Image 1 (tube, rainbow, N blue to C red):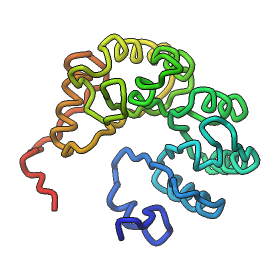
Image 2 (image 1 turned 135 degrees about the vertical axis):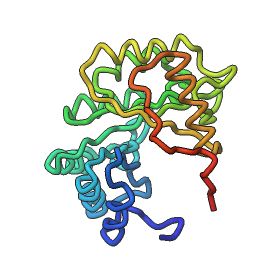
Image 3 (image 1 turned 90 degrees about the vertical axis):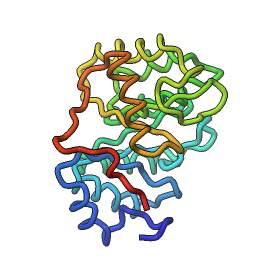
Image 4 (image 1 turned 180 degrees about the vertical axis):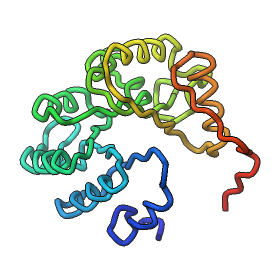
Length: 225
């Protein structure tokens, strides 16, 4: 597959299925202005893999400030996801826009992006938590220094206050949601990224469900090409 090739097109399904066998999978939705046909294709791919799709506002033809909102297109996509039994999670963007979509479509889940919520000058981090936690089914776990979405590993020095992390997990635990968390960072290599983020979340903060290392795992064997 080329660098810009969509991984969700039908010709790639067999390879995706084999590559992710016995794995917990989630798909980051297309952000190239997908048509209804392309949405149908990626929803079928998600169904095949038993995966939720994390979607940005723009992929549903909804602008951050609701200046442009094709509710008909968004409604068709969301209805199709529900028909395919695929959880569609709306990634954190403009809080008013995300909440407006949630009000219109009750099958939508929320992907809470900790980095985005930390740098919004209009709404506090705790306001994001309070508004989105009841329907949060996915977490993008990332840190920054309060100005830009730096995508640092959780626990960056000078990054998001520990109180925010603790408030997030305490609030999520009030609801009976199955929540998937994904580390979203750059440009860390996978090993250091996972190690640093995991130490902070599970060992320092004491978050539940710490992943167990598989027998025989050796991080030093990772050799990217």
